[in-house]
Length: 421
Ligand code: GCO
Image (cartoon, helix red, strand yellow):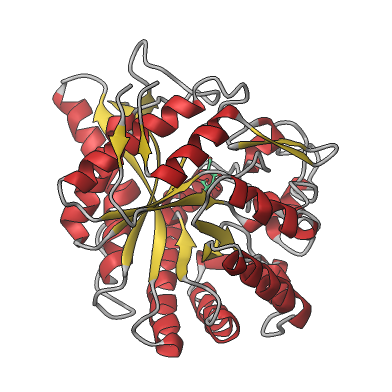
């Protein structure tokens, strides 16, 4: 592993999501989902516990200080802020305002994600983003957040990973709503989430003016053909397009293309101030007569605890592509790995940041890196079993312990460089 230097002014921090860390909230679809029998969560855990962050904000902000974080991507839990349709909760507003102020006082700039997978129950009962009502509801919520938090939030990620949300929730049925839907429904949800971003982008700038920084966090992967056979090559290209290229274009420009639709129902324009990329891994695609394609990993590759290939070059590839297409500064809004033993997370971090340093040295504007994630948390259908934290969480006692990789991160965050030991 070689050393690297990031440009002056480069910002590092961590990313989290409200549902994955806060605990204690019963008024959203993930809480309802976790409560089903048999449990749809691998280890039977529920997001009601998570990291109890709602009651430990101060401790966790101090932890970020220890890790040298200059930025932090956090989520608002929509159901806490808007527990009933059009009814907003002042106590939750106060809570988040306090948290944002605490971060700023610690010298950490807060980015807020407005939608990170959990829907208030009143909205999931209406079908969430299956219909355009979801878009209207989201725009109203964004308007509220802009007015009440605009003075404290440094930047905004409207929606998180429309493509992952639609595929795992609606195609695989492994996340709420929890049943497999026809492909058309999944694409409609993806489309509506992209348009919800466009609507929220306009709303946030409408309230906060041109200086607000608004983008999204899009999940980008590499899709490579498993063999050189033309059908595998075509399948890989096709999957890349339907999974991420079409939705990235819709998020940036408001214009829909197949399989999401046609035209620009919410207007065509320039709808991101930064391109937020969540990058984790790559899939090797093989054409299949049964369901279009199957995904795998290259033989003998290094993998994390969840079997995802560790492929740092992929980060470089997705950044190049996204920047070439959209021309905006790129922020890595998530990157990290599942490693309970902390055996390879440090190397993962270093090898991925080395790619960022290389891109920045070439003049590609990659400006920020938010590591996923601060501490082990409730990892959706994997529950508490999948550990992505720079900090280890003991869920029983809620004790946090900084891992060796956390210390590596802190060193890089402070010096903006890494020297090979
Ligand atoms: C996602 C989310 C995160 C995950 C992370 C690790 O990609 O599903 O944005 O909430 O926890 O990606 O899987």
